[in-house]
Length: 139
Image (cartoon, rainbow, N blue to C red; front, top):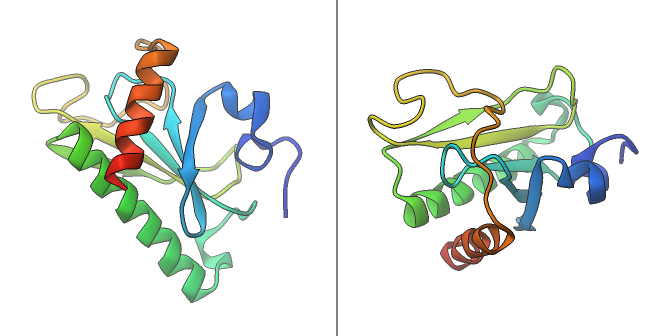
């Protein structure tokens, strides 16, 4: 099922507003979050427009969390954060997804909750592509 108003479902300009596709995983898509106040921040979005984790079969739920773990391992390998925070929201964008937010000791928002979009750090196309290439290599 797809939702015509959902960036995760439709891609294109809707997704381009906040993210860049990295690759497909087993049951989800890995997306680089454009706002990079936390270097390496990504989103893992389930392949279908499902709102709730409980709406997945046990097998799809397990595969989704395996995708989240695989993406987190790649983030650790490439960006070397001290911690990765995980956020699963969806009050307004009802498409199952998890934010993977690398945190670095004594740097931006260390010791606190991450902002959804602090709007402070955007990169050049070349810098985004370099990050994506490194993530793909680590996967």
